[in-house]
Image (tube, rainbow, N blue to C red):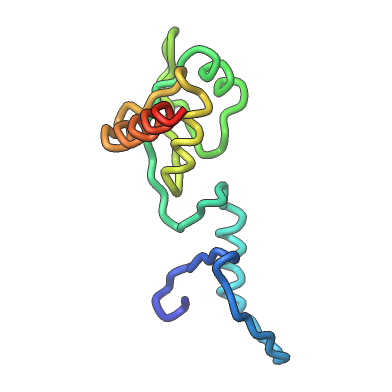
Length: 130
């Protein structure tokens, strides 16, 4: 939205009653450049323009995996014999939770108790319904 200089995102599934207009559109070169820059940096389907980060304690198989092939949204902050400390940057906590769940019990959230508690509650809820 050029009036407030915010890049808006839309979920196509929720768009309804779309009407095609047979008019020519002349693009704005600056907006197109801005979009290209954002798209080239985009590393997530959850893109929202703002990013958060969280420290993770990574052990065992997850540690080995990340040392070999670390994703672009992560960086190893500290290395130890038994574990690494990794900073994960994310747009939506679903990204963070998905990664941690994938590597249970080898990955733990260590610097955000609220997120850690929220993930624990999700896991407890899942286990209580199985």
